[in-house]
Image (cartoon, rainbow, N blue to C red; front, side, top):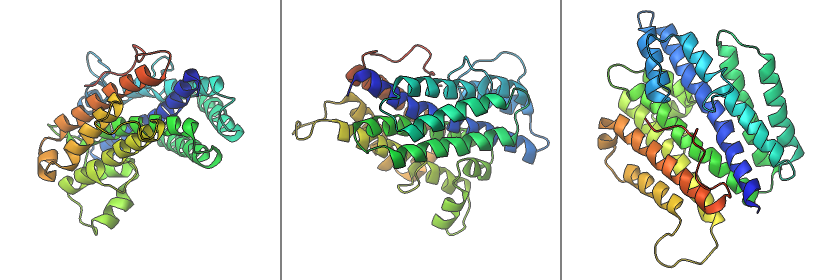
Length: 308
């Protein structure tokens, strides 16, 4: 496959998932402020904007500031508007490889999103973004051949999902009072799956462990890392290595996955913010390795988000 097409497919997966993940993180903040009338809006907003998403902001920060930066700012690739725009531009460049339905889904999403207008962020904005991201991903899975093109798209999606779920978990694990874990579970779409797996027993440690380590929930950090490894393995020439792994991206993802999987669960939860920073760092390094190995552009663009 041409490297420019592979790169576009990879970033379609990442940007679609980024729009979805950003909407979920903002929804955590929205629900936190609604459920706790005495919550410090400025402190909670600063945590999401600067600490979780890595966008420095001086002075007092409000929920409206978070919306302006992470929802409506098209120039910011970490915002919902920026992610949808970038996904559409990459889809346009790879149009001959995408199914017609997938191109129409991404293109329609971008134009309808522009029709929402700017202003105060509402639940309608955030739920619509999540629904469209799920629609685009579903169309890709059901209308594309599961060949190299699909592997690159799902690889991008899985890597971004691992990063975004780590950031979501950090909103609940942030020292000094993060969002309630019930809110984080709900924003991840994990409430029902969690309650079924835990037989209705809700605790902070159980919720954190589920979102980080569960092997069967598709939005968990572990599941996303494992799926990214599977796509990289599928893209590697078969039967070429008998010793070791030469793919640096697979090595990075495998190391962080096994460090989570085989470490005592209590140890992971006790050091949750640091563990999630390690996940973000591994994902960033793996993304750079993928770009160097497969894409003509080489290292990632300078606007790729920093790990915080």
